[in-house]
Length: 315
Picture 1 (tube, rainbow, N blue to C red):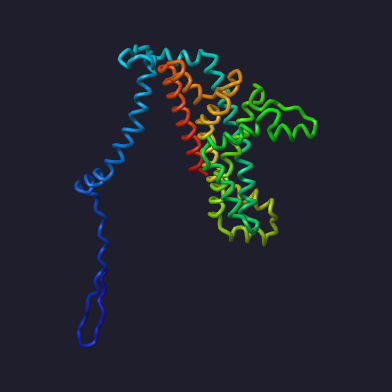
Picture 2 (cartoon, one colour):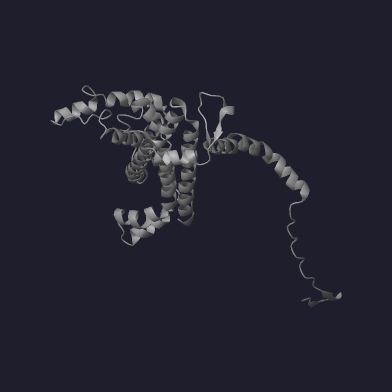
């Protein structure tokens, strides 16, 4: 509401109301076209290398086709390949092995990674950076090089693990040759290889927790255990869910260690989904069944990522 002010020698002066802030204009057609032009190269690459292969995999999964014959010889069979996958004891054993492998890998890796992250972040010790680099090095070193080392570690008779067991009078479990121990041996390999990566992710999450929260807790008399349970773990929940998501996805997609160390054996004890897909397609030539398994695995990964992503957003 305008008011009048008395100014000596100038009569009255009416105060002006401030002008409202200009409204933000909606993007015009010109700007939308420009945005589409800048995004089009990325969209074309995504369509060519992500969407198109997924659609092609779905299409092949609905056909009977041997990879040893031309693609024009495909025969439409509908969902028969999916029924064959469910009815196959070999494929179902691969599913069970994958579930065990993923569950054990996540159950061991996540708590161990959290413990190491806490030990590397809170104590003011010299050489923490060197230890982090050494842990992360196990992730960046090529899997082939690591497999050469672990094949000697697991070597029967002369391997260091068997020698250590012999010192205490324990027989070798037959790390990679025993059907009851081979899958667990691969889990140990996976934990050793991926642990440093998850530790670095959790340390990065710890840096986001304000130090003032810990100072207030110490003033209230909370010890290290109480701080970890009441402060660190709740505030680190988002990072923990992300690490769990990465651990599950990486474990489901495991292929290199199985292919290089065990070839799915012995007696299909380490035959997991990714290796079973490769063997079905390229050794047995059953591209339709392999595509059905691959597309089912894609749907499974999308479901797991969606569930854990929703949990992470709520964290």
